[in-house]
Length: 117
Image (cartoon, rainbow, N blue to C red; front, top):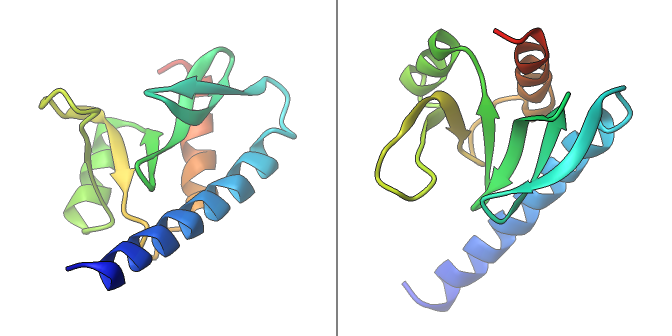
């Protein structure tokens, strides 16, 4: 592996952070959306509840279970595991290389969490 892999990981991490910055800028304009920390990462909340965060270079979103399953089955993401070995079926971790629209997915997550379902 070595240096080339380390450089690629660093570049991917920076790209993910830049993508998430765009997501944050767009959503922080919305009423009720605030910025916060969760699992040591920057996240977005609506009405005090987290709906999106950047965790280890991946976009993590709170979505309906069926939508999470669809994203996982399509290969766009994985069930989110915050590190304790137990995945959360209501959260998806979107791969940085996925062609998924991070801004659109974050809006879906915000709308879902805001709905209180």
